[in-house]
Every structure is written in C-alpha cells, then in structure tokens.
Length: 114
Image 1 (tube, rainbow, N blue to C red):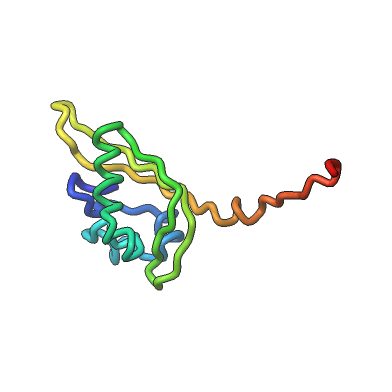
Image 2: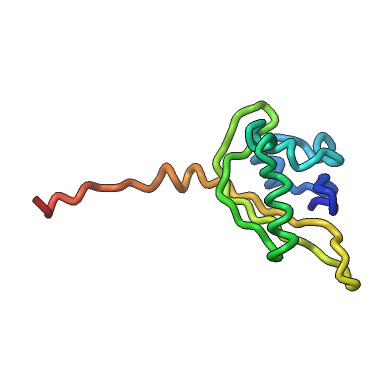
C-alpha cells in the first residue's frame, strides 16, 4: 500500500520477492524507487497515480526495478483508495512478474501457407 503521496506504508512478502527489498528497507520510500531512471524522468510515476485517481485504477505492463538494479517485466495494477468522505486515502498496488509468462509463449511459424 501507498499513501496519497505515493510513499510505501505497507509491504507483503510477494512484493519483497519481486523487488528484493525487505519491508523495513522500503517502508517510507517513494514509489519511484521501483522505476528505472528514464521512467522517473518521463514522469511515469505521477502519470500512473493520476490515472488511478481519475479512473479508479491504472493497469500497465512495464519494466520495474529491483533493489540490486536489475529489471523485470511486470503487470502492475494501481488502485486509488478513498475514505468515506471521498478523500484520497492512498493506493493499493499489485505487481505480477510476467517474464516467465512471456518467455513460455512460443510462436510457431505457419507451415501450411505457401
């Protein structure tokens, strides 16, 4: 979970496995900590949070950054969370590593058409 400004407030073991940060290392860090530098410079963090605010959620397939600097392809769903007074409370984010899915897809050439 993220607060309304995009700072990590909670972390689960799945997120720890993908990003390779322990919860104590990442709580309080900004969401941009998981983005490659070029995405930060292109304002991807702000854009994705704004989409979630405007549309309720933002779904993106993207490249994410691990603690060690390595990259992985993921499907990321960011959902805006509102309190009972309809004030933005924060964001819930689900990250799914999809590299294994992408690598398991094999495209076979069509040998029937000549």
